[in-house]
Each structure stands twice: as C-alpha cells, then as structure tokens.
Length: 616
Ligand code: X8Z
Ligand code: ZN
Image (cartoon, rainbow, N blue to C red; front, side, top):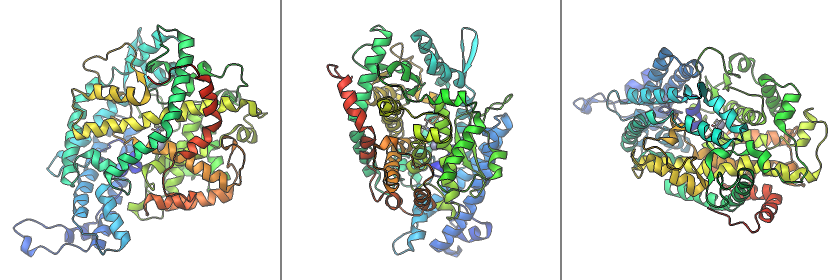
C-alpha cells in the first residue's frame, strides 16, 4: 500500500495503500526480465529514471481504480462491492510490492536526488506488502476486506435491542450508569474475537512481504517511513512521550479523583488505573464527553459547542460549510462543486457503510471528498475540520508527481485540520455568530481542561496502538498473548483497566478499534497531537499574537494561510524536517508547544491534585 494517507483513501484494504508505483505497458515490457533462461538475452535493466517514471504511471492508474472501487465498497458494503474492491486492492498491492522490490535493487549513489527519493519512497511506501508468490496479495486483500466488514457492520444485543457502534458511542458519551457503561463496553468488544485468527494470518503474510523487501518485519517497515533510521524513530517517539507524560499524569490524577467523587470507591477507586468505560469514549482515547463530571467546581464555565450548534440549528452540511469557511478565510480556494455532489456527509439509510470518518482524493487531482456519518455535536465539528485538513492538503500537493503526493510524513497529514481546529476559540465562534458573548478570562481553566481531556488524554493511546502492533509484527506478542500484551500497554501508558476485571480467554480487544481491522497505522496520530500544537504556535507567532496561546485564532489571516499553503504544496517531495522548517523554523518535532498551550492549566492541576497519590 501506499503511504498512510493514501492508504486511508484506499483504505479499506490496508493492504494496499500505496502511493506510488505504477508502470506503463510499454515501459514495463522493457523493464522486467522475462525468465532465468532468457537472462542472457534479457534487455538490460532500465535506468533508474526510466524505471521510476514507468512505475509512477502504473501505480497512479492502479490507485485510481482501487480508490474508486474502495469508495463504492465503503459507501455501500455488499458481497459484490467487497469482491471488486478486494480484487482492485490485490492488484495494486501485488504490483506495488513487486515494484518496491525492484526499486530496492537500485543503487541510489550518484543518482539525481529526486529519483533517489522516489526509489526510497517506493520501497518503504506499502503498509502491508504482499509476498511475491501467486495468490498471496489476493488472500491478503480478502482477509482485510472481511475484517473491515466485520467491524463496520458490528453490533450486539442489549436487553433485546440491537446496538451498533454509533449507538453505543452515543450512550457511552452520555450515560452515567456504570452498569450500563460496562454492558456497552463489553458488548462492543464482543464483535472482535472472530477477527483474531484472520488478523494473525494477515500479520504473517505481511511479514513475509516485508522480509522480501529486506525489512526484519512489518513493524520495522512502518518505523522506516520517517526519513531517519527505524530505531531512531522509535527512540524519537519515546522522547516525545517523555515530554508530555508529566502533564498526562496530572490529567489522569485529577480525572480519577473526580470519577471517584462521582461514582464512589466500589466503581472507581482513588488509586490505581481508571476503569476504561467511565471516560465517555469506547476506547478511552478522548475524554471530553465527561467534561460535566470533571468540570472545575465553582469556576466560570466556557462555551458548550454541542449546545451552540444545536441551538443555532446546524446540520451536517452547515458544519462542513463552516469548516470550508475557515479554510477560505486563510486564502484557500473553495471546495469544488464535485465535493458536495460526491461526498457522503451523513449515514445513508438502508445500506451498510464504513462510518469511520475519512478523506479521499479519488483521482489524485481535484476529486476530493469526505465520508462521515456526521452528528451535530462539538466532537464531529472538530472531525469535520480534521477531514477537510486532509482534503486541502491533497489539493495543495496535486501538482507534485504521483509519488510525492502525500504528507511530509503521516503525522503532518493528520495534523493539518486539527491545527486549524485549535483556532475554534470562543472569539472565533462569536465572529461566525455561534455565540453572542465571549466568556472572560475566568473561563480559561474550563476551556483548557476541556482541551486537555481531548488532546492530552489522547497521547498515550496514540502512542500505544502501534507499540502493540510493533510487538505483534516482531513476534513478541503471539495470537495467544495479543490481548494480554494490549492490556499491558493500555495500563502502562494510559493507566486504565477493563471493566469487569479479567478479559475472556478469546478476547481480541485491539480488534474493537477501527484502525486495527482496517490496518491503518496509528503512530501518525501521536505525532499529529504534538505537531498540531507546534504548527499552531508558529502560526500564532506569525500572526503577531502575544496573548495566551489558547486564545489565539488565525481565522482570516491570509499571510499565515499562504505560508501554510507553501508547506502543504511540498507534499512528500522533501524529507519532513524541511517541510517543518518551512513553516515553523524548527527541524525537530517538539512538544514544548503542548506545554506552552497548557501552561496555565498545569499549575491548576497540580493544585487540585495536592495530597493525591498520582500514578497507578
Ligand atoms: O481516525 C481518525 C480520523 C480519520 S484519519 C477520524 N482519528 C483517530 C481516531 O479516530 O482514532 C482522528 C483522531 C484519532
Ligand atoms: Zn485523519
């Protein structure tokens, strides 16, 4: 597959994601040796530039075909759409894997740096490479498609009612009955045990493919996508975590204390991990939905975005129009008419779809779309900006050559819309008429706490999903220990524990998180949660903002927009530190912007936690 971002649109079968390889008929017939016996007479290997040009053209055509098939599948899951999409995905995976191997065989010393970079990107671009043997790519695509269908159509029975993820999520966000929460959590986690054997088989096939490309395993391939040695990248993620861990521990400690006050010792003890179903989200990855429980006592409350959207009669389309308006205010051209004609903005009735939000560029040119089952609430208002960030990035780099049409790294792709959404301040909401008056500075603690519940609480989850997959791919975790390894990381990093104590022997809890059955790498979101603050701080500095960071909005700032656009236009053409430097002046990912943003909250949290034994 392509890189993640492309992987996302081709997403279904993670197997393929690729970004780049293609070949044209004529060019390719020169390229490939025909057989061993004909070796002596075989045409010589094409020059690196010729190989790259042919590969790009071939991959581009295959990607468009797979993208269209996948769009049809994800917006209408049937036996036949699965079949067609899996076949298209198998084709691109097979070709991309073969081309990756050919790319890896070129010596890049002395080559034009653009050609050398393209060869490198082709080699490392797949998410799940296929082994060369006949039928393997199709087998992988079939497994991936089946797992994603199981997830997308998953439901369970609760007291005679059929509950799907949408309904379960809604209730997890609003119910304050711990018995009900445990049932919802356990119910949803009952959909994944049937995936475990398939998952293990896909892991084993992808590892075979990764080894053929020269990687130790698929995890090593995933870690190699960041313009630095794979081990250095792993160390980098640990370094970044150590920068944000103290703040996370404060948020955890404060939240646990308030949950204990709300539910009592029998439900949530004062010490130890937090019960995973009490945090307002199925995966305990963002905690903003329990803001009412943790809201600072006696302090001025901030804006309730959900309430404002409902009161102002927003619908899904108006939410997307509003997101578009923000990008327009930065100087980006309006979305094309086809975006509105072809996007899926709400859940359609009468057919199964993949509801997990995604952004697509079907033709790698102008045909950008989102696919969401949007609900009118603050969380989905953020998600709309997140998805549009992907689309504006895709459109910005559309004139790059095919292999360079991707984010500087996948964390950049995830950070663009979120960076913009950090500017959804009370003052911005007043400017667009969603609130009448802006709360004064006494509401800042409330605002920062709400943000911390979503952004800081997310970070250990963002980190651990792929720490788990790295263990799976390396063989450190086996199918028998998948679940135990998962909970070891969940407890170590997030400080949470499953409701109801020990998990059933057949549990496969990672499979109840979309990105595992869909094979979308996850470290990108950890990176993005740091990068978005770094981009935002740089943008606010460019805008001349000198107040507290959390009150800065770049709405309407065309100069900032132009500089942002310059970074987006680079796509993946240069190593990511250059893109980062172009916008922020820094070449390193740096969590000090997170600390700057939450500075006023850090002291407040420490004060609230005085006398508590923090940690777990
Ligand atoms: O999957 C997503 C986006 C699509 S790339 C909706 N996110 C992660 C998740 O939902 O787990 C955004 C935040 C983290
Ligand atoms: Zn995303």
